[in-house]
Image 1: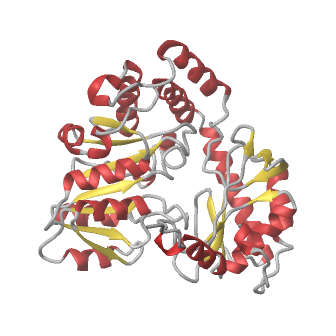
Image 2: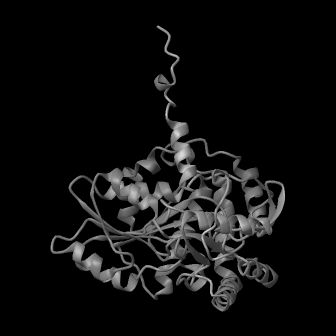
Image 3: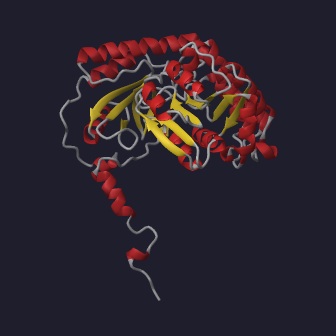
Amino acid sequence: METSSREHRPDAGLREQLDQLAAAHRYRRRRVLDGPQQPRSRLDGRPMLSFCSNDYLGLANHPEVIRALQRGAEDWGVGSGAAHLVNGHSRAHHALEEELAAFTGRPRALLFSTGYMANLGIISALAGRGDKVIQDRLNHASLLDGAQLSRANLRRYPHADAAGLERLLGDEGARLVATDGVFSMDGDLAPLPELMPIARRTGAWLLVDDAHGLGVLGRGGRGTFDHFGLTPDDDCILMGTLGKGFGTFGAFVAGSEDLVETLIQRARSYVFTTASPPAVAEATRASLAIAERDDWRRERLRELIAGFRQGAEQLGLPTMDSPTPIQPLLAGTEARALAWSRMLEERGILVGAIRPPTVPEGTARLRITFSATHSDEDLDRLLDALAQLPMADPIAKDEHLD
């Protein structure tokens, strides 16, 4: 019998769901970048000044990192060919793990292909059905998904609220407490000096996703722990990414010898995936060395952040409390955030509109991010453009295009 009616097709209803996203100003589209990651480039064929990359130190297009990648490809080829536990774990991977362990001051480090995979692997390897996992309400999606994958009982405490965490822990404690180090959409920091003793007192692991702190904060870019003058012990797990401050690709977990060995055995997102290319590991070794030695890059970020916040305050712009290169500009509604982003793009400035479900309802925003390679002229141009934004809700057309 012929079944050609639309309701019998597997994609029936998808268009309606996409149209609903567009009507709610939540449809997203990709843009095509013509050239390397850097503040000034071409996007969809147009020259654009970007303030939305996570390449905080400006290393993604650094000549030394590029040369290290090229040499790595000459030495190791392009692909790793297999998972780390088969024959994909090269000497380049191993050297990078040792250097990351030394950099973070931890006994061991373990490479993962992405930060998302690292968080899934950590939580699902350490927690399971019947365990309690407690997380900050504004944690990255990968931390929340890791808890769901583990089938543990997930509870969430109010953002950056140590007292709220302590109440949820109660007398019975938890298997694991997880938090971002720097929150990726707000740019603020987790109160690690308060969280660490609470987790330790109740016997819980403390997992800190420092994707946006490493390279940027602390001595030599050692991240949020170092920023607070803290020395993580064996109850602390550090997850860091390599595609943001370090400008390459991948992620790692740093912790105790037993933790890393456990993840090698039990983290499914490590065991059952192909290792990243060894050439990328060589490039990351170069970028790690540059990040550690070039303190001027972090100083430059501090100058840009201070200049932006001073200028934004003079303009009366609705900024949020952030000491990091992530500087949100609160719009409130999705329509307003989209309209602001579009107006900036018409002036040749790219800043992404961040909308629910990435952020909570009513907190749509522009997420402005800085790189050490932005110039004073770039900052002035951004502030001049922001000064032209209307503060009232716009009547936006063709929202589905964004």
